[in-house]
Length: 170
Image (cartoon, rainbow, N blue to C red):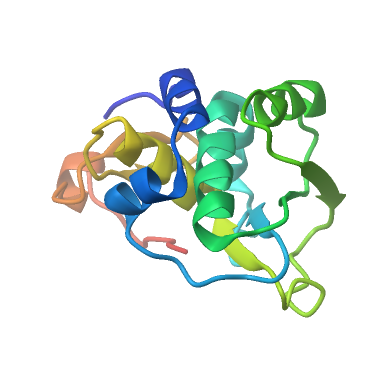
């Protein structure tokens, strides 16, 4: 399993890319009249993927910037349900000229964001990885262990060799 890392090289790269260059990497995204929203999936009631807010803030901002450019969004909103380093996240957003707002909520109110495009935290980090040529990966945690990335082809028996009674997914 590979450790989560802060993808600062992706943040530097997205800073100089225009819509055509981003579209060549990610394809087209539908236009939005509002903003792009980064948030934890509502089904992640344990908040396991909140770890990305702390370990990969550059990846999250890279994904939000790329999504904003590709959709024509007016800015970005980060919906959080835990303590975050707003100063670091804001500095990363300022580095790529991305207007950023924070919203504190236990769950994303989709009606309040009906004119926006929603992205999960792991989708945003995956966009950053793709921008720098990273491989596809799945974020997993065994029991209360530290989340880490594994290849999508990884078998459950490799993660839990002594066997598992159940699997929780989002």
